[in-house]
Image (cartoon, rainbow, N blue to C red):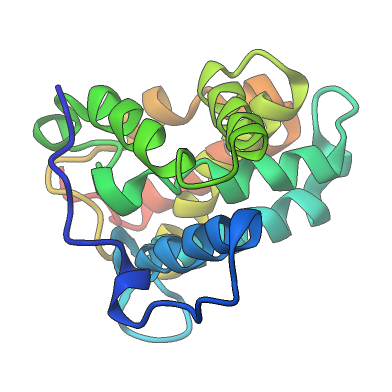
Length: 213
């Protein structure tokens, strides 16, 4: 399944001066294009204000979590690499959109959409750099390295923490404590400590009636 071409690149709205060329032009074009992340809304709601979180905020939060929580990783990790993975992993959603973890209809075909989006997005960069960043995205998706497993733990824990703080606001209809446990158990692959904490949050959320189903 392919991703339809979106509207023209954002940089076309006010092209950079002709004196900016070569690799720098490509890199700045990429940086401007991923500003689209700020417009991709997620299911999670922001704790501090009454609105949905966007993808850029989510990625920033994961990067900070990786720095703060690295001591809880199952295996020693290169924190800088974990930060790189979590910052890059959702960039494809600028074209593919967000598919909530528990929304089966939205997730249908999402892998194919993201693969197509990765091909289009990382091709905006100079060849070598684009290939390197695409490889980091592939590493996150494969979840084979310690860094990728810990990055995925951050990606699963963060929405749970926001849901706890907002009393389950934004959570998909029909989600239950059991379905949350099933989808989030992979947190343990990257951090048993954080999975233990997640289980406490799930149990107490269920007791408080934060689940609709």
